[in-house]
Image (tube, rainbow, N blue to C red; front, side, top):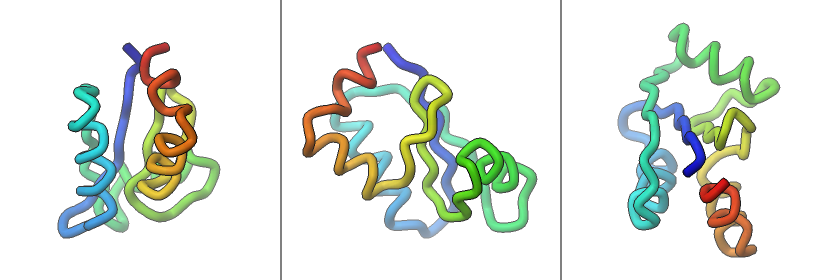
Length: 85
């Protein structure tokens, strides 16, 4: 199974939505608390190529974007293959 990292912050409905999708699929993930201004948020920005929003999801080190991007991959039938790699 792929390694999944997800950068989140408190009171973020998009973070909750992305985590819920991963939970429904039974995918373990590394949740990284990254509030605005934190070192973890700067790390997420650097890893994602400059994206400043949360959540930021990485599958096997590759940035896939946020919640909407994750759900779009799922609707397109591409997410399961990425997670199984």
